[in-house]
Structures are given as C-alpha cells and as structure tokens.
Length: 507
Ligand code: NAI
Image 1 (cartoon, rainbow, N blue to C red):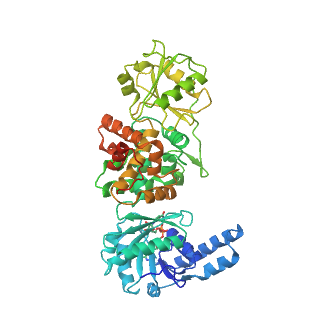
Image 2 (cartoon, protein in one colour; image 1 turned 90 degrees about the horizontal axis):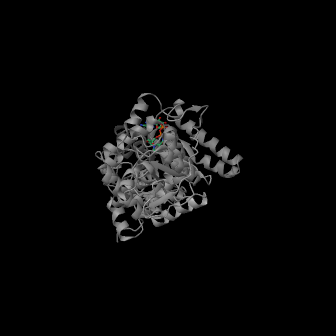
Image 3 (tube, helix red, strand yellow; image 1 turned 45 degrees about the vertical axis):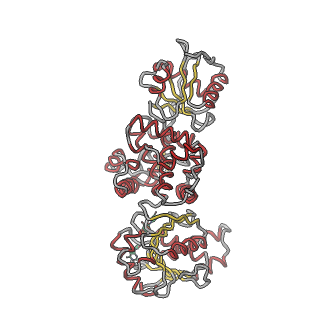
C-alpha cells in the first residue's frame, strides 16, 4: 500500500503538458521525488525547465526560498523511457484525453511498476472505470482530477471507479493533502463534481438568451452585480472558448442520457460554426482588442413620470422593501386593497412571470412591472414587463427603481427573471449531485467554490437564499414551461418542505 507520508516517496508523472507539469511542481514542492515522462522528445525537459522558471519567479517574489527552489528542482527527474518508472510508488497520468491511449498506457505500466504501485488518471471527461477496465488489477486505479492552473486551483477530485479498492481513494486523499490541495471525493460519474455542478450556470443563461428575455451583456450584468458571480456566464464562455465549452456541454448531456437539465443550446453551436470562439479568436459574445474585452455600455435609464405606486409581493419582506423604495424616492404608495386607476402596479413574484402575476392578482397587465428581489433591494435590480406593459408605466418603474442610484436591468417577461432562474438551476443541480450520492454535501460545496470560483457552494447558497423559495421558483417555472429541466431534485424539495438545511445528509 502507498505510504503517502514516506519521505522517500517517488511519483511518476506521465504526460508533461500543462497539467502534468503542474502536478509535478506541487509534488516536488511537497518533498516528493518525481520522475517525468512524456512520449514527445524533449517535452519532459521543457516541462522541467518551465517548472524551474516558475520557481525562479516565486523566489523573486519572495514566495519561495532559493534553497527550497533548488531542493524542489533536484527532486524533478526527466526519464527517457517508460521503463524508468519501475520502482515508483504511484504514477499519475496526464496524457492525451483518449480512452484507447490511456488504456494502453496503463496496461504497459502494469508490466513496469511493482504490484503495489497506485495508478491515477487526471482525466476530466472519461470514465475512470473504463480506463481501469483493461488493467490486470483495476483495483489499483483511481481518478485524481486537478484543475488548470494546477498550483492555483486548490482542489482535486478523487474518483473511485467501480472496481477501485478502498485504499486507493484513501491514499489519493492523503496525497492531495500533502500537495496542499483540498481533496473532494466523487463517484465515477460524468463530469464528476465540478464539471457536473458547473452545467447549470451556462446552460440556463443560454436558455434565457435563446428565449429573448435579455441580451447576453444584460444577463452578465445581472449575475455579476445581483447574484455576485465573479464573471457573467457569457464572459466565462468567451474565456473558456466555445470550442471547449460546447463539446463539454454536449458530452455531459449525452453521457447522462439526454438529461434535460443539461440540454445544450443551438446558440452556442451556431456561434461555434461561425468561428466566434471567444477571447482566443478576438470575438465571441464580446469583442476583444489586444486581449481586452470591449465594454458593452449599459443602456441609460429613461426619465419616467411620477405616479402613485401600488405594491404586491410574494414575500412580506419584499413588499416592505418596495414600499421603502417608493417612499425614499418621494413617490406616493397607493395603499388601497386594489390599485387606483392611475397607479403603477409594482409586483415582486417568486418564480412566476409578470403576466401570470398580474393576472393572478387581477391587476392591469398594462400597468404592471415585476421586480426581482431574491438578492435583496440593495444590489442591481431587475425590472420585468408583461408583453403589454405600457411604455409610460415601464419608464416610471425604471425611474423609480433607479432613483437612489441603484443600477436597474430591464428584461422581458420570464418565469423567474434571470437571477432566480440561474440560481435555482445551480442549486438544484448541486442538490441532485448530493441526491445521487456522487459526493457529500460538504465536498460538493468545496468543489464548486474552489473549482468554479462561485461565491458559495450550491448547497450553502441554497440555504442562504432559502430552500423553500428556490423550490417554489422551480415549481413555478416547471408548471409554466412544462420542461422537465426545471423539476426540483428530491434533495431540494424534501429539505424545503422539512425546513432543514440543504447540507443535511441522509441519516
Ligand atoms: P497537453 O496536451 O498540454 O499535454 C499532454 C502531454 O501528454 C503532451 O506533452 C503529450 O506529448 C503527452 N502525451 C500524449 N500521449 C502520451 C503518451 N501515450 N505517453 C506519454 N505522454 C503522452 O494536455 P493537458 O491539458 O495537460 O491534459 C492532459 C490530461 O489532463 C487530459 O486527460 C486532460 O483531459 C486532463 N485535464 C486537462 C485540463 C486542462 O484544463 N487542460 C484540466 C483537467 C484535466
């Protein structure tokens, strides 16, 4: 068995591209002897030199002592033949993402390394079970999935295939900790945790764009400034490149036998065909000049007429927030049980669109504007009109909502606005990962915050926004659209009804 704390630990790294060299760097820094092998001549030497340059940079910045850098470099050994991996305690492969090639490598390695040697794959999209299947001892094979750039992305997924022996998972968890990374354990399923949990953000944003609810830049603004994502989904698609993102979306969708939650969008396929790949091609959703995104100016808010404002909300706190906005702007709240004939009807629904809300309240849809308050009234506000809202009433609402200097986005009618839709989707997928026992609730949240950079993990985020609310959002969208992509995960709906945290594991 692998003793990860062994001072004399020797790790083989096969494939020394962007991932392999990152893994080798971490291992060398952690005091582990590394043997680097790559089938392309000179690739391993180049990788070693590039790690050396990284150490130099760290030393210059004072983040690493010259002595530590020298010692770490002395632990990195380039080997010219696979046979030189004999005697390694473990081998991590980061070669080309091809099932046949990875299987052949592992079969050859079994003839070289000792019977106790652990074999790990850094695959991001292949099944660990399938890679191990042609091995003589598939029990020694596990997944060890790092993210790019390896030293900065402090999380690694530890994956057990159908036949992986328990010691392998334990050893990889211990190794991850020695490398300074947070291990998260995942069952061998498509996308593991991070690439599975990450499906919601982009696909729902694309759906919103496809439905003509809002422009791509408005969706980005809302999700950055209201929900608090570091980047909007379209900025992220441009950064990753559509040539990478779209095939991943299609692959996860197909691997889950066309699960509607992951349904990709023709919008991406078409843009990909047009060569609008994103940053790398100079134009994606945004345009880029010398690598910098050309800003899309936010539309200027109109000057609307003052009117009395009648308010209704699905949550009492939201009603109070809207009334405060009306009072703070010096406008007059219409406190009648029914709106007076000249009042603007401001509503704050949960999950429903403006039209359904107006009709349910029996107020005039021509005077109705809906406001999204899921993230509170302090951040960017989203105002949504019915198809028949009169421009004068729309402009009044936009003026009122921006009177205190808060930015306002205007969108077309949509069940769940933008933020409610995207957040409910992200939380729902996170919940279903827990429901399918792919990973523990804590590991799901750790994987998503560290691997995707979301401000919170989906389960903690769901708790903060309220499981009951998110469950209601999904139910309303599901009812309105009939689309099974919006069906709530039992993990979410049960905990919402029980009034307990989404992080509550099964007893
Ligand atoms: P890369 O193309 O930068 O490097 C792959 C290296 O493997 C090349 O140097 C190549 O010469 C070498 N190689 C190919 N076949 C080989 C073989 N049979 N034996 C020895 N060396 C061989 O690729 P990258 O991006 O480092 O990816 C490697 C693996 O890591 C893939 O499985 C990929 O899916 C996975 N991965 C990649 C991530 C990324 O963001 N690039 C993130 C997470 C996982």
